[in-house]
Image (cartoon, rainbow, N blue to C red):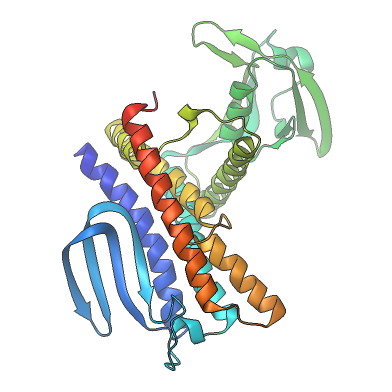
Length: 337
């Protein structure tokens, strides 16, 4: 059941992503020839109207195949290649956008069901670092070092990853912004650094509060993801920081075993990762197409479809090679968690 839950969660992300492309394609009058979930051999499918709907054997990925998307010459006005740059841009960007919307919805559902914590201090432990620095109950944490604090999880993450180094905490008290330096201390029992504060719980949030929290949590994850991408480009990431399909299924299984809301939380996390990964400006990814269509939109000149096709085929081959290598890495050197 845990494996089934994991596969369902991952499939949900793919379905929502591809549904974004599919919906905007239809709204822009593009002929959609195939809507497939999964990869590899077809398990089952049916045709409705002009579109073939398929479910395939491997629960990784999916795609929407549109007439003219590979740049082939056609006089059909419903071909993707014959649409305006703005229309094509909207179709491509809809996938990542829908993944972000899904994350907001999932985090909103979790908060509506379980409540959440805000980075407003409800308690300060006597003689702990925050107490010594002058932080009081009711103070709202705004920033720690260079990280904006949107959720309580942001604050915990910064304290944990800072590994005991001094923290420059910016907070709001009575509409006045203040900053203090706090030196965390190690909690030996829990083997982590703390500053001695507790958050304010919201136990029965309204729909509006849940949606707001969903936005905040999603925004926080976006910032963290771009921060991680920065560490990759700086060459500071380790082999244990990377995982592929095998790792995703394993972690999803662990999340499913921990409970339904843990699985939803991990699905929301993955949805943000999928959105960010897809907007990387690399050929064959949505981000590569977005760059091309932005160039077309600015220059008002259509880029040679044959050259685009060659570049995308090369990009796709590189991506498939990377997927194989990451999968091998997952098997030989699995991430420990």
